[in-house]
Length: 500
Image (cartoon, rainbow, N blue to C red; front, side, top):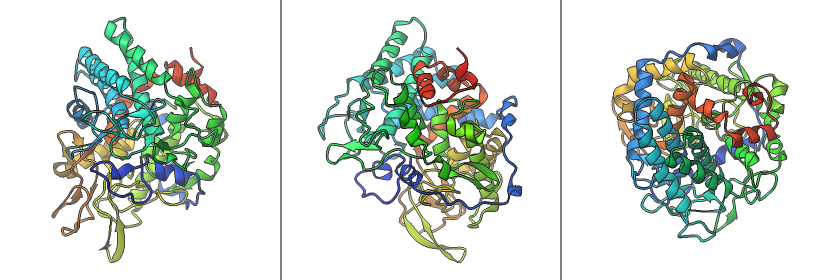
């Protein structure tokens, strides 16, 4: 969920991501100019490697437990609202609610909490979301047309500041809610209520209204300015948005919405560091939709033409980033085969500073990535490593993600690994102690490290650990009629999608 460009500061937590995925959506609409690397840099990912029996290390289970605790302990038990970040005071991120809901079910399956505890927290969350006021007014509401504002005030759930009504943040929230509808499947009255509320929330979303320039879906809307001037087009995190909109039982968008979203894919297909794939530089674009959707063995028209699936595509993206860290063309400190991972994350500051004899640009919160960035906006590297990038790739590429998790904890754990798992990011090259930091702190003998955990980065870590170890999220969502309908209308065939 990246921001392209600098936004004026409004309040803590809101300025960093005015528009979810803005950089990705804009860059994807433009061309691609990825430079190729020799194929000998790193072998192509082998499709069968995922089939190896999962053998998570002790540190991975510890990471899962700590990351679960982040959602269980920082989410407001009276409302279910999940903070955008912690411990810095921040509003609620509606996308974080979707990850929090998913975390509760994973917590039950891993023995962290009881089913009754998860049911009660889920009911609190869903009832609160259902009852929040909706309408076109600029104040006093939480959303409009079934969508929610990007950020909500933690105290009352109403719109925070002047943030936008976010289509993709709403989709991430609804994906988590749908997963809970699948998880709570007994005749218990509380579980029945969960299923009914989720259905109500899903049915009131007016996806067609959000098609300001059909058949595309707009990034967002605000009472002050109307629809944002950008649509979701090109490979990015919006796959889950389109699939939910296509699968909607009462107001689905036309099937050609997927075709227009994927119409620029040909320009994004390229080779980077030995990996031929559909590229999106920050890894979050490969991970978010895959939290809930098992893309193994199912393919749409574009992936059929390339003879791979989106799962394999995401594997290759992870391998390409690792190869980039090994090459380390910008000579940042700390990069190697087991310390890698660029995505949207916190960074130290928005400034220029001299490093290794060159004037370098550093950023605070930004999309970071390597490879084809279309306009280049998302192919930005300032030496800031986000552990979520490698950790949340564990379901795609465990043979490189597991060593990365273990190495980062072993090598830097005392600085980057805390009560709730990995802090959001770190940068061993940034040692400018007199810099005016936007986030985190500089440790003289180490470099810069974030001091916050971010919900949208924590969520994929836990969910993808679960998908790697037992496939629990994917398995339940593969039986979700709403999602299956969306995939089929998008033209996906094969694999589990053709099983009853």
